Image (cartoon, rainbow, N blue to C red; front, side):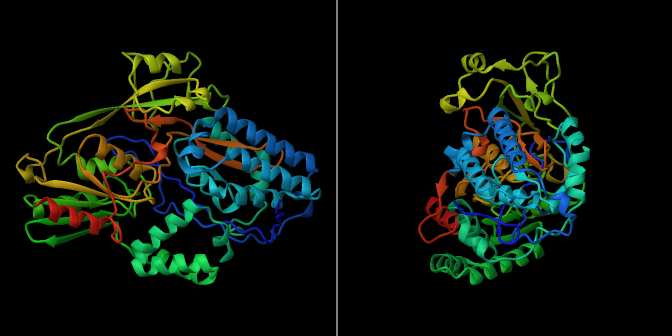
Length: 492
């Protein structure tokens, strides 16, 4: 097993802090507009030595507790493996071996070890081991239980994080690329292709294969610079009277931010075009209500009601989202309201699967889950006077998809596909959707980790976390836009 220290750990992960849930009223969760973070080489912290020294057994106890909590509360434990190739049990085995190999391990090394080993789970179900830099934004997190917020403020948690500099764990290193799992390399390739172009993405692949990580890292930096400067909404006329294009690069904005005016002005210009291409490939999430409000509601002829299903384990942390009487009517933080006559109770999973036909439910996942409930998602038809109370667009709609799409954009892609609103073209989306979040504090160190609470499926039983497959995959040598334009030509 490899041995890790505070000055040699190299980490590169996705940490998603976007809201997944919400409704047509535009629920907003203080999203900061940037859900992509890079945790790289970690340097020594300026703290009292006594603050880092704990007996080895205390770190093993923390690890055992973390594994127990995930095995008994993380509903997407198995989905992480079959959908994303992440074997969580193996991660714990690696960490435990490293602790045994390092009898004098301290708290900083233990944190680095968690960050390094769990980087492959980052971006799955909003999982995150909280670094010192991430701790200071937790007070603005939504979708968590009151008990989770209490744990953030508990004395031993505050002692751990407040004694460490917030920026100490975000320093540059190129060698992180050598440890990235395949899933992350694919996401980086997509990112570079979108922001720097196809030639740069091909060069990135060559640099990774030849071990030239410095050059690969430089391309990633360039892509991030382009992303930072891009507009939230981009519109274009590709062909007069025929093909219109709109890209929404983030859903991290408030419903009253003026974005609807931009979109409706564009719809007014292209209302009678033959084709509208909606590009969400750069969109990593935010408020899922924004897609419904901006794109779907002005266009759909009538209100749509969709059924989803949420499942969960009977764990000590998941139970924080259920009142003692086992009735659950939903909260302001989870607006897709459970439905079961006038009162809502979560049913044993066997009863729910008998009551509803979910033909694509992964039956092997049933063994980990305890109960579930039906959800109702409403997309209101809202036609505007400026369009004479008619749909804002009358032609064919195409939705471009890719692996960077997670959380709110994942939900948007699935809704667009399941309702027949759009034809999806591109690659499988990234997933990362499980409703409310659990925040757990390790008992000895006070290190926090975050994960989604629920196993949420569509009406067919397909979990959102596994991503959404397009109707048409990219053709050889073409990206999603090029493939769509080719399809349009063939269909004419």
